[in-house]
Picture (cartoon, rainbow, N blue to C red):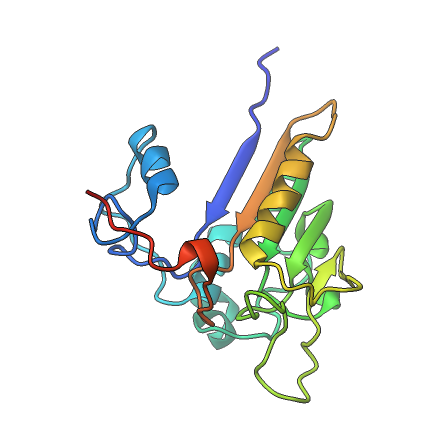
Length: 211
């Protein structure tokens, strides 16, 4: 029997062509540069101009407009109906353990959260555009989408813990990877950065450019 490989899909949210070191020497991204240099680069690849339609296309393999206008721009409304085949669901059907940590933003209420679309477990924000350190969605004071930081669709107590969302997302990913298991896994890592709101501090500020 051929052993099924583990699969990890990573999204750097709203990352532009010139926002990475191997395309722009004024940007310092050594780890991403190393990953690119050891793998394959798709130099003529295109994505949708906003985050939500990009996720729709990735999750379903379909043009976002197939699901109506809500899929063509950033939105909190559910984009595709329950029962829609997704990348995660296909891995699940193939015997994979599936997990996501990060930004969902394909239906920002628990009834349309990631666990309904092929993920055994999930962690992160149901909405997009959360504060990098307080993990809240700030579109309106009375928004029904805040708080949004969850585990398996349930709000995590103490979610406003002042830690960067990238660290939280990464730690969950490492925890999942290190789990003991008897079947392959699919890990979906949709990071929040560098999507707005931009809020970088400490070691991430004033980092020198590449030599």
